[in-house]
Length: 458
Image (cartoon, rainbow, N blue to C red; front, side, top):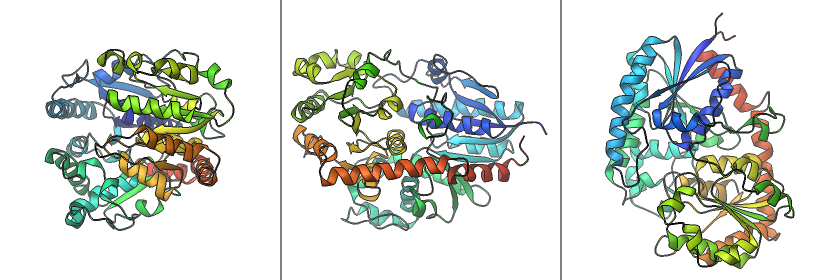
């Protein structure tokens, strides 16, 4: 039998590309060739850091924004152009190749329609927790009034009790209606599938057992955590990166040597991901918290933020004191940082990639959610999985330095709460490794999926 091919259509954002590339590696290992389909902008940046193992091929299409969407650009038009141009490019690809199956990002819902027209079966790769997909599903299927009412306790089937502050921002009252429409479109695409729509989720059975079984209409399949196997114990020691960085990394900037010099579990690692740009006032509050905690820290301040904010790091009023206590870099390998023995706490926006990485490597978190799915992720981390704490926001929606310091100390001071959080973080680390082991739940789930949808693989 010849090898079969899966087309992996991926939205050009770091939070989609990282798990998609890791998923591609799993497919290659299972004997399936992969064509990775994304935008020219993403591919140009990925090409600087991505090597192509045998069986992995890249196809890039122009979305009209080959240099990326500029700050302040028209996001609505960007998504419209992406959809129109992407549809045509994907249709041509599916009709000209031997693709047996399509897997697509949830911001590429239109890809499923193209696949149906080309008579190619498809599945969604969901790069947020199963709980978030369930919230969206129930919102558009009979629970909108309860969610919109903003009650102190929102009870949805199979999910923990929620408050309005725990909801994805797309469902908040102040969010423009077009964002809700985007999510409705994604679910309608799934509902249009014959039989149960298949959704591959970057989670694992032990982490979200109830959410994975909460929607009768879909088959939610846990195949995660989708992080490089070198960090999951017993994996390929050479598999240490996702391999598709869209942002320029610092050339280590001495991070490894600096971390080596710190005591075990002492460092506060601060990073808010690849997209978020914090206001100057919030940066100052973070600086106050780090200085007040008087603990060594590693703070990632994006280089792009420097450029747009006139060297924001240099403008911090306490820059001299900060440099005496910790280290600030423009970018780094987050997995290598989280995997270092000196790191004791991760201050994070709680994007799902960062959350999954913290769970997989057993690092407690201080969650400072901002948008999208991050509030829900923070809720799960604090109240369901017990592996972190969540900051309380002030009246302006920001976080005061004293509040951030309080949460950092709660996680890292060695007290009763700190010990409980660390024990839970260690528990989830072990369960994540178990899920991705040779006979683990996620590997079995993926094998079963492949046999069902593709059949006899080499």
